Image (cartoon, rainbow over all chains, first blue to last red; front, side):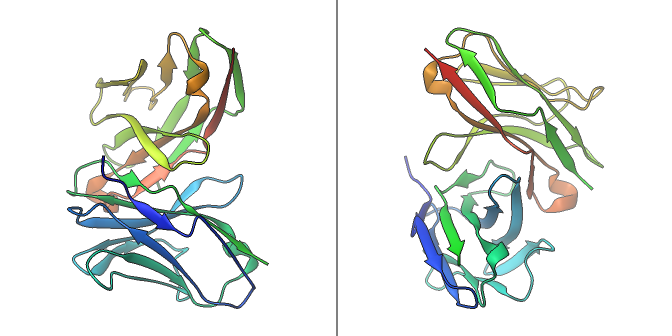
Length: 113
Length: 114
C-alpha cells in the first residue's frame, strides 16, 4: 500500500539554525498538510497546501515557517530560525480528494538544543 | 472554536477486557468524526470514521457511534488484544468552515497486558 514518507526520522539542530523537513506524499494525492505534536500535548494543525499554494494556516505557522512543493513529488517544511519551543514531532499528511481521510507519515522528531 | 476532549490516560487492561475511550467534542457546524491510532514508532493511521449523526464507524473490532445529542464519539472494543496497545486519538473535521483541518484530542495511551 502506498505510504507517505518523511525524512529524516530524527533531526537535532541548534537554536537559530534553519531546518528543512522533507516529505514525499502519496503520488496521486492533491492535498498536503503539516501537523506537529509537542511532547505530551495535542497534535496541532500547521498548514494545508493545494494547487501549489497555502490554502489554510494556523496561528502557529508564522513568518518563521514556510512550505514548498519544489518538484511535484516532495513537500517540505522549512523553519528559518529554530527556537527551543519548535522541538516536536512533525507529521506530514496527504489525501487525494477534499472529502477523504488523511494519510499520515511516520513523523520527524525535531530536537532544538 | 472547535475542540475535542478525550478521557485521561493511560489506560491499562488485561487481554480480552472490554475497552471504552471517551471522546466529546465542540463544533460550530456538523463535523465528521474520526479515531486515529498510533502504534509505537509509526505515524497516525485512520481507525474509523463517521460523517453524520447516528452513523457507526467500525474497523478491526473497534466501534464508535456519532451521538449528536451528547456530542460524543466514544471508542469501544469488546475484547482487546496485546496488539491493540497504542495511542488513540479522537479528531474532528468541519470541512465547510475550516478547510478540512483536523482538530485532535489529547490522545489516550492504551496498554494491553497478556
